[in-house]
Image (cartoon, rainbow, N blue to C red; front, side):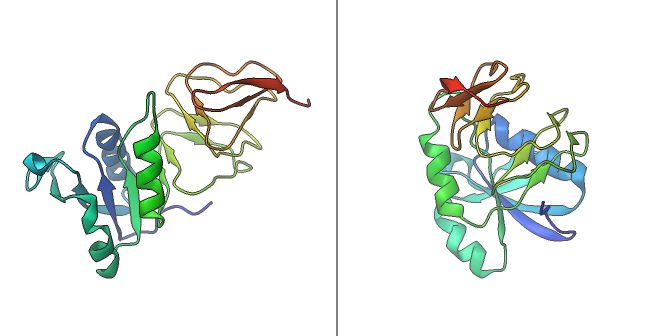
Length: 174
């Protein structure tokens, strides 16, 4: 698992509640500097969110990449439709990991690109990520979540869930 390296810089995309959670997580990690936030709303440009300047829109990503910033976090949440979040993820392409120090993560867990693990999360042994999971949602014993799924309610034991929102596809092999 690759975690953002010490003294590296990261840019946030979006200034909503999810972005604020990630900014506080990055501050708690103490391993990266949040160099700025991007948002499409020009009224927010030059303002500060949790002490971080909103630089402009996501159109600045290529210039920031040229300036050496190689890590981005997507601060746009997705309680329902995740089209915008997926679009921003594809646009950023150079994502790092954001893991809150209070999260409990098994050393045998593996992660895909762009993982954000918030405070208090528990990722148990042999877990593999590839989806969005709403807070307070449980993925329980022998459940499988399809890549790109949006899990908005608990996944029952021995079940495969897929789609947006995630729904049962069938039984998982125990």
